Length: 301
Image 1 (cartoon, one colour):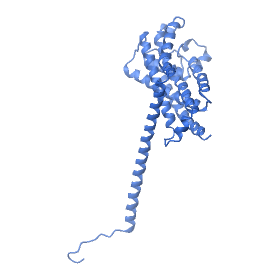
Image 2: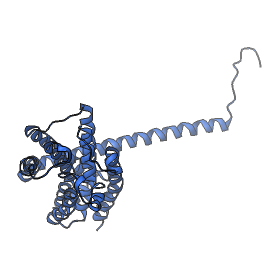
Image 3: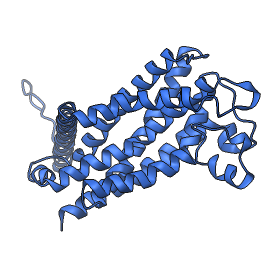
Image 4: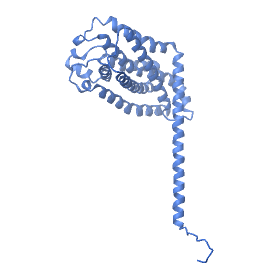
């Protein structure tokens, strides 16, 4: 090398090609991540718009407002005063404390009927067909519908709790137990909303959706421990009731709020909180894919 010259490092063609490929791959990954982030943001935006639209429609419908506000009050007053003297609990426990939680659990399961009727109405009026023509993420219509029904159920639960406090219901537990009970209840209510979505898609109209919803909700509510104790049931009926998801939710909430558990040696009763969470998780894992599949299949007809 002569004096005054600058050494030049030779770059192998293979090395240069590898570096360019790595830069291109990194750019593709960044673009894919940005695209996914944008899709997720728009999906959340669509869910919010559809949820707000459903809530606004409910607010303008007096019948649905009454169903959310007046019906919980009627149930609390009916069972607190009319059936209080006829139904006795083992151990002379407070029936008011017992039945308020039962009404609360039944309201969570009744989310299925509201979701079924609302989705059946939207399908029969052609609104869902208009949603399908828009560039919306798959499944956002169902998520928006179920989230709106979950918000309505939350309002019904608050009305139930407020009415219960007026008739003498008291919570004998720390605040975090109350939050955990509310979380279990809302999780089950969301699972019930997805069940209602499946019913609404399969139904031919709002009337049939209401009939099918009642055939599901009434047996679950009446064959549960929401209003009566399982301690005095016949053995074969007790074995069915203790596995009822509404019963499991009611027992879990009562245990978290300080009420004694039934004297029944059954796994769903002894581990009610875990059993309720497991019920909700299994239902969500089965019903969400089923509802999306039915929704897509309905659109291909």
